[in-house]
Image: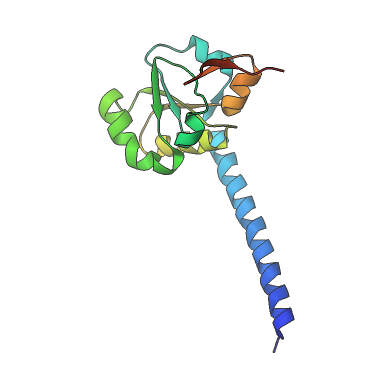
Length: 152
């Protein structure tokens, strides 16, 4: 029979392994999404048509710090995407709408794009590197303060 210290140590080890396992599983999900979904560069957003829908999958407080301006912008937080996608995208623009997802760094956008694809959307891409990559390339974002750029 294990004493309390041994039990604590075993529990700590199990918790650490669970974190590693979950991290590895999460990394595998991101890798799958990035393989399945076309990753476009910031410059590619300039050549896409006006019918493109730019879907920001960040949380509302992240969106309020600034967003990429486009003809058609939607904010669908990743945690609510599956519940809102049909009503906000398919019912308005159709299942074959040209969609580009983005987040802060890229993984949430890739995961969201993959989920949209699994939901039957046929033309989904992700902005590689998210809004940070967009800013790093010298592009602007918009917020209640106006147009903002990254200063180096």
